[in-house]
Length: 110
Length: 113
Image (cartoon, rainbow over all chains, first blue to last red; front, side, top):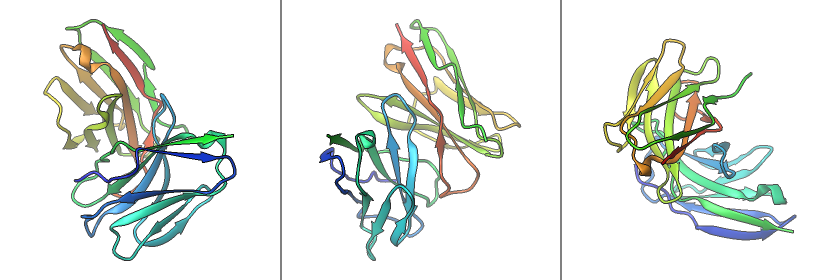
C-alpha cells in the first residue's frame, strides 16, 4: 500500500476555513479515503471517511473528485483546539492495516 | 461504552529486558492493531489480530510479537529491548471487517534506558 501525499504543515487563524489536500494517484478500486486527527501524546482520532463525491459530518467535510486521485478535508471555522496533525489514509483492498504518512501539522493561531 | 484501554500508560525498561503491553478493545470489537510511533519514523504498523489470528504484519524484527485472546484483549511483547524501541505504542480496535473506523487508545509510552 503506497502512502498518500499531503503538505507537511499549514497555518491558519481562528474562524477560518481550512482545506487540506491529499494526493493518492494510484488509489485502488476498493480503497476508501479516511482522515484521522492526532494531538500530542494521544492516539489518532477518526474524523471522516469517504469513497467518492462529498461526505459531511458534524466535524468536517470530505471532497473526493470523480477520478479519486486526490481528496480535500475541509474544516469549517477552525479554533485553537484544532491545532493537531491530520493524516490522510487509504483504507481497504486486500489488507485492513492503516498506513500513516507524515501527516499535516495544522497550526491555528488566534 | 468504554474506549480502548492500554496498560500501562508509562514504562521504563533497561536495554536487554523484555516488556509486555496490554490492550483491551472496545466491547464487541474483534480486530486489534498495534502501531509504534517515534519522532523519526512516525506512525508505523506492527501487526493486526482478528479473532485470535494474526491477519497482517508490518516490517518489524521478530523481537516484536503479539497475541490476541478469546475475549479480544491483545498483548504485544518486545524482547531484548534496544534504545531505539523507545516509542509511543498505540493500539487500535475495530468492530470487524475492512473500512470500519479504528478507535485508538491513549498509548503506552515506553522508554528504554
